[in-house]
Length: 426
Image (cartoon, rainbow, N blue to C red; front, side, top):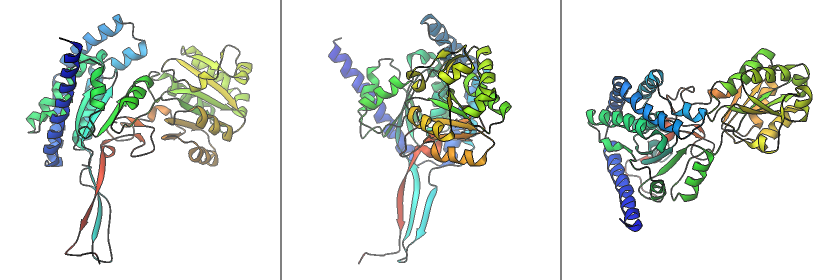
């Protein structure tokens, strides 16, 4: 087969995916929230009863990943075990139990002429999710889209091809058993990267793209897309230890934010210490504990004076999302200087302050331009599940439509509904 024929076949395949998804959205529009909830509960049951089959499929992906030399952090993202599969099922169950966002009246009022004006939540339509490594995204994204009345096309990475297929089979069987079109959730079966480009050009067929993965993936999606894209490029997250920080709290938060799971987007990549906190030995204490945990610390000049064992930080270090056991550490003269540093180098994802000064906390919250601002808690809480959303379709650092972890309600738009009893405009 010629390259032209192959390209034509791939384009046709992508068009068919979108056509089936559009037809599924029309069916979803006529279903009740109870029916969508029933489908989610069936999906959760299938995940539990087929957990060993999912783990066996995942083992094939893990073997290929190790043979390909993927980093430990990426292998961790890819790994499924009984606990993680059970957590996936529990997440689907939590989403099933949430209030149905479709049809919610966001606001409403009656005009002097008697017209009733309402802003009502409605599904976005067809959503394309492009993701890497994490197979749990398959069921998280599917569940959130089903709950919000959207059809979804899932394009996972080749490193999770077996895991994604096993999970998607659970989802589609649950939909069928609940009387819903299984094409509400479709997994792109080809690993050909050109499929993504075809899908991103289907303006009028696909309503929204959400890429989840590394910066290079997200920038490639944005460059090719003819449809709206919700994104975050990097998770360059900060912890600022204020002069008024409790020392033990600061140590606990810094360690958790960096080491609890370093390969994820809400792990801390930079710690900033107020000079007063650094001078009383807190910087040395934190750097000691980080080093013991295997973290490579890169510090500015003032950090290296207090803790000579660290490597020198470069300008690039302040901008880097390491996704590994590496962190940049700096010392600032004031809270304002910390805020300026974060707004200059950060990615507007998640940034935290540790302080006992209420006024300082409020200034930090007001000054940092990020989707998530944490006060006296780890950046690792920046997560849809931790926020009570059940799961997240992604974390947006955009400012329009949605910002931060996106749950089912964030996968809706709205329409204006106007009710009258014969009014005409004079």
